Structures are given as C-alpha cells and as structure tokens.
Length: 414
Image (cartoon, helix red, strand yellow):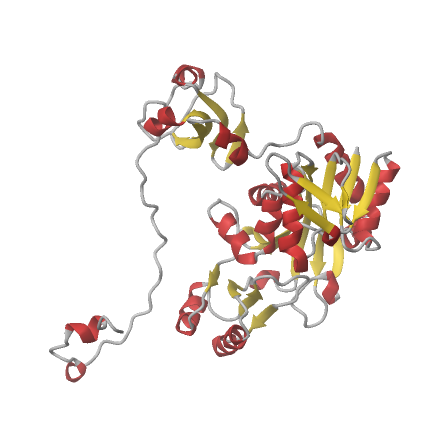
C-alpha cells in the first residue's frame, strides 16, 4: 500500500508513530503538508498538485487535519475522494465532527446518549435555556474549541449570563450544556478503528480543575469498557461518518453520554497509558480497506435515474408485518433491502427468511416510484413536554380591559 499522511506537523508524536507503523509493515509512506497542495478541477479530471508538481498515485490517505485549517484540509481530502483514493476519514466526517453544534445535531436524532444542550443567540433566551438543561451549574462551550480550550463551568445563572454576553460580544458562538455532576473531572476516551474500540482510557482532572484533558494536566488510567460503552462509541463514530475517531464520553447515571467525537485523535496519551500499538491498528485497518473502499452513495446515485435509497417503516397492522423479506414482494418490485433496523440494532443484508415485525425500519435501494408508494404519510413526532414555572397572576387592578390589537402583536413597522 502506498500511503499519504496529511499533516502539518511531521515531528508530532502521532504522525511519527503512524509513519513508523506503516514502514514496519512494509508500506510505502510519505508525510505531506496539507497546506502545500493545489486543487485542480477540470471536466472529468479532478487532480492534485503538491509543491507545484502533479501528485503521484496513492492507494490511501490518512488525514490529520488541525482545527485551524479545517476548510482547506477537508477540501484536500474531498479531492482525494473524487480521485477514488481511500481515506481513513471522509471529508464530511471531519467537517461534521469539527463543529460541536453540528455534531450534536447529527447525534440528537439517534437513540444515543448526549448531555442536554442548547444554542442561543438572543440574550433574553439565556436564562430559559439554562433552565431547560437543568439549571446552574452549567457548562459553556465555544463551538470550535479544542483540548479543553473554551470550556467554562459557570456556577450560577448570573455568572453564566455574564460569560455568554462577553463571549457573544466578541462574535463567539457558544453552547450551553448540562453539567453532569457525577462525572465532574472525569471522562472516558474510546479509540475507534473501523467497527471496534481498540483501546480506552479514563481521564481524571487534577486539583480544582474540572476539565480532564491531558493538555490540562489530567491523569490517565486504563479502563475496560463494558459492551454498552463500546457500542455507543462505535455508533457515534459511524453516525458522524468517521472510521478512525476518538470518542469522549461522560459516565452518567443513565449511561454513556457523548461529549465529543474527534476526527484526529492524538495517540501519545492513549498509547502511553495502555501500552497498545494503536498506530499499527489504524494502518492494518487501512490496508485491509484499500481494495474494498466504501462508496459515497450520494454521488453514485445521481447517475441512476429513477433509483435511490430510502427507509421503509413497518407499522403495526401494515401489509408487511409478519411476512418474511422474501415473501414481502419487494424484490419483484425492484427493491433491495440493504439493512434492517430493529430495537436500536442494525442487521445488515437480512436473510430472505427473516420475519418482519412492527417497528422495523428497512433501508432499501430501488425504484423510487415503487418505494414512494410504500412510505407512509409523515407523522409529527411528539415533543417532550416542558415543565413550565407558574407565573403569578395579575390582580384585578393590574388587568387592562381594552388592549389595542396592534399593541399586543406589534404594528407592521415593529
């Protein structure tokens, strides 16, 4: 395998270890500075130049994209993808994970634990938002902070309001997040490669520091994750579109809570803590994937007129409940079942004899016209009821009997 490692820091521990692991396994490897690429676009001929010379062919690329160069870095990775070069992490996955709000938005539609989070811009919305995430103390996070930078613990609502106002005055976007008291100063980092956790450690903050990042002086210890934590870490990485990821989780009473999914996880802390060859696991995974890369369906399906991918739900009392995949008649309608989702688990390529039950979701590829007929009308999801504080009722003397409509709802100019 001929491998390119995209990194602006060739002497960094993670870059060195990945290069050493690849060379030890007999692969040809080069570290290429991400910022030295030029992206050339022409009809049917996406191309890359490195230091003004046309880039030679590579079998795979391993992106180590820093936060400060996310836009250009993901553009370079995207160009490799258009040239059919396998990438350990996709450009979309890197972009998804780099923005904290975007990543939590993506995770929130799935049955996967995340701390209650809210994003506000109007100062009037700050106090109600704090109340919705459980009240003070509350965590305030910058959207694109790394290594614990831009993470603040506000002990009271007034302090939180002042901090947010200050940050917003400097054009910073911030998140408000529930403070998980039982995890104060501790979190778990699971290192995911492909569909498994290859290593895990617990990070413990020192002294009065509540942030457990190693860069903040946090202490590390080996942890043997149970199946629930392992499955959560792998699912989070896959949902984000990442094959190599560091998944940070809080150990809450109700189970694992995803804090962050990192697309360029550092190796030094976790390799030193566990003594495992994690760099080698990454290289071995990539070598196994090179000949069988995953396909970006969104691009491939644009040339398949009339065909696409959608999800078919099996309702209680529907025509497919109780029948098998084979006898459902889907195949005869030019519809192929790619996977079956049941009770939070995914069954890939379900067998023809698999019986369908109410609540199943079938991910299918086939004729769009046929599949449209099988998709039930959209039903609005029930929203969780919000606990409202009772407001004091005005006395009779305070009630104004006649209120002008424009005063209540605002004039057209207001």
